[in-house]
Length: 377
Image 1 (cartoon, rainbow, N blue to C red):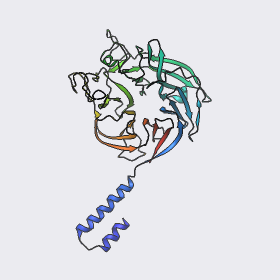
Image 2: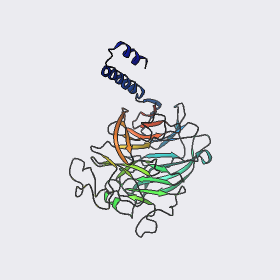
Image 3: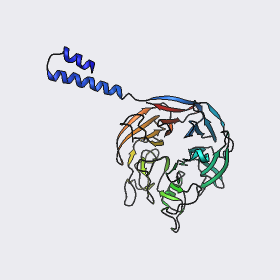
Image 4: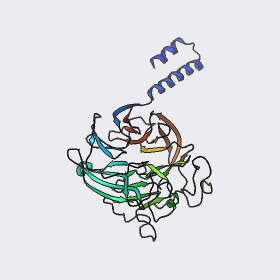
């Protein structure tokens, strides 16, 4: 305002000139006030990290795809691999994948994690719980809560994002294992599904297909491809995203009993070109995505920002990582509609994004020298 008053004193008394200068300086001030946050390295040297969870004391739990889970100190010191992690299939897209801390971690020290589980016929996505030992060196009391059926000989499309609801239930996203895409339209298997469980692995009494002949009771929604992003929205609904084949990455709200269309409808096409199925993008009874990308950005990780730490313009935005283009997408929403997209360049494949307990955003990069980054206001 000092500079504006000087200009008013020095410039000719022409209102149009004064208003133009005033507007220009106000705009420059607004740009300065909205300088983009910067990325700050919290931890480095992580080997293909896949997910990060937050502990109440400021530490982090990070999974590495090869089958290692580590505790990272608040100052970024990376601890040794935890003992007690079950055997995982670390091939292709498989490995040790998502991890979340129970909302009551301070009382029960419980972690939930999902991974590619070996077994007869191949592999599938499994979900387990365990307690982090008091000294932070091991998983104890590991319990398998769920195993995707059937197991198949594929190293692709495991899905594997976990979301805990306010009442303690667990959502788990499951890929359709690529060559089993038609399974996504059937309810007698877990391929291409979102499932919903109690924290002990039992099936909630209000699951949509419970008691339906020929349907697996864990299923919440179906017709998905490969979901690698999931989070609760401000509406307390489950928001997800999934990889399209070549184009057609989707954002959806996974509602109970709904069919999201894969592979009957899609905005993507076969790798190398060509229609998938009938090449249609809509059909009665199949849900349309809230948003989709063509070309694909290869999305991974997903978080709503509820915190005011970055200012009002960011609060309520949805954040999605891009593996293909090495950026973090910031999506402005009006209700359930994406109205604008911004890109925050990261420089490495973005595997995960989460809002921490401190209200800041954290990003994991998918690299042999992966990093845990903090987005600093």
